[in-house]
Length: 486
Ligand code: BGP
Image (cartoon, rainbow, N blue to C red):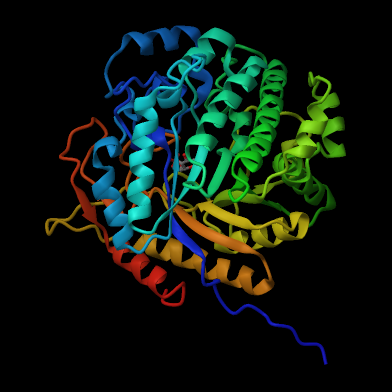
C-alpha cells in the first residue's frame, strides 16, 4: 500500500509576519544625510485615484525638487517609522511576529547613488532596526530595492535604462551583505520586478513621452539590467554570507481565461507566461524561448554583453517570494502578444467580489498560484504581501472594527494551508502593511492595510498615534495557534 506523510498544517518554523517598504513607512526623507529618491517625487493622487506614471517628466521632477513639502509628496513623511521604530516593532512583537519584511532605502546608504563611501548614519539606522527586531525574536526579511532609487541616478543616467546602474547597485549590495552578515538571513533583490512594465516606479527611467513601442524597448532593457544586477547580488550574498538566503520577488496575478474558447485559453496562457518569464529568468537562470518571439514582434532588441548569460545562470535565487492581492481574466480580445504599458489590466470576473479599488478578491487563486509555482520551479515559496486596502473608520470608542480585513485574510490563510497540504513548500507569510502606511499606487494615507491604525490623514494631519484594530487581536491568535485558530 502506498502511504507517505502528508502535511496537515503550517510547518513549526513558519515565518508569520508583515511587510513594509522604506518609502511608504519611514518618513525622515532628508534626515541624517539621506538623498531624495524616485518614490519621493511622485505627487499624491486626488480622491483615491490610482496614479499612472505618465505624468512623470523632467519638468515634474524639477518641480518636485523645488517643492520642499511632504504634503504633496506623502512618501517623504511616511508614518515616521524612522522615529517610531521601537514602539512599532514592539507592537509587531506583541502580535507574535516571527518575521518583519522591510526595505532599505538605497539613498540612505548612498544618497546620490554614485558616491564611493556609504553614509554611515544611514547604516546606523538599520543597525538599530535589526537590533530591535532581534531583541524581540523577529527575523528581518529585507528587500534591497523596493520601488525606489536615488533620484540622482535618474537625472544622471536615466535609472535602470543605463547599464552603469548595475555597478552602482553592486557597490550598494556589497556594503549591505558585509554589514549585515549573520544579522539578516533573508534577502530579496527587487520588489515586484514585473512592475517595470508600468514604467518609472520600477525602472527609475523617464519614458512617459515615448511611443508605446519605444517604452517597451526602454523597459525591457532596464529589466535586463535589473536581472543582471540581481544575479550578481545573489552571487555576492552567497560568497559573503553562505548561511543567508536570497530570493526574487514577483507581483503575482493569477490569470484565467474568460471562456473555454481555446482562443481565450491561449490568450490567458500567454498572459501568464508573460508574468512568469521574470521568475523563469531568476529561478532557472535563463530567458524562456517564448520571449524571443515576443521581443521580436514588439521590436525589442535587448542589448546584452558577453558574460550576461553566464551571470544569470550563476545567480539563481534560493527562494521565490511574491505578492498576491487578486486574480485577472484575459480573453483573446486583449491581444496580449502586443506590449501594453499598463501593469494591471484585465477583465472582470463575475464570480469574484472586488475591493474598493476594483482589485478582484480571489483566495482560491492563491492556492492555484502556489501550486503552479511549486510545479514549475520546485524552490521554497514565500508569500511576502497580501492584504485588503480599505478606508477604515476610527469609531468614537477609539477602535477600528475591520471585520472585512479579517474575512479577507482568513480566506487566504485557509488556501495557503490547503496548498501546504497539496505538498507546496511554503516558508512564510508576511501580510502587507501591518502598520498603516502610505499607499504605493495612490500615495494616500487613507488606503489602509494595517492591523495597527495610524492617526494621520491624507493631508498629513494627525497625532501619528498607533491604535490596535480588531484584526490585531485576530492575527495574534492566528500566529499563536500556528494557523489553527482562524
Ligand atoms: C504592492 C507593493 C507595495 C504595496 C502594495 C499595496 O504592489 O509592493 O509597495 O503598496 O502593493 O498597494 P497599494 O499601496 O497601491 O494599495
